[in-house]
Image 1 (cartoon, rainbow, N blue to C red):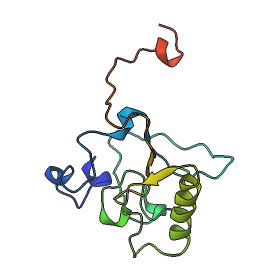
Image 2: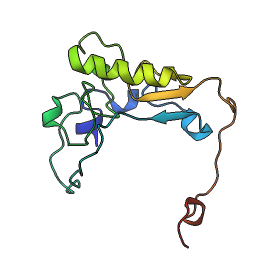
Image 3: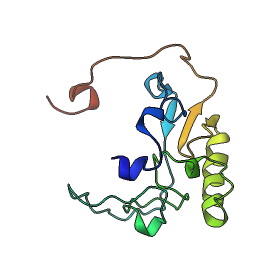
Image 4: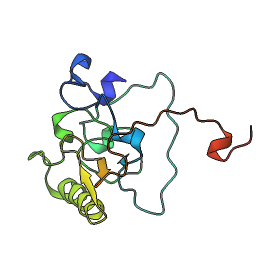
Length: 144
């Protein structure tokens, strides 16, 4: 997935550069990755295995269609252009990032500056706990 999600970042730098945390707030239930989709959401086409991937920092029209508002990069793009306040992001893309930040900030979520989509609720209920437990279909409401 390197050609799409981190085409300009050396994989060995993902932790050191802050793109991936060694201990994640996601496992504490306090952190979410999200974007904005205009409703009603249109169906998206499935990914076709082997399909050519487009760099996440390219124009929205060139990236895989995901129904999200244009934020200047794709979701989960490990590139400096994905930094929330990157000065190269202007116009509608800047307004969309600011809308997301303002909406979530008003509910107590704080943005990770390196990722426009990454928000942590503050104060965290379990700041020093990393949950690790098996998930079954039954626990997700499924049968089996």
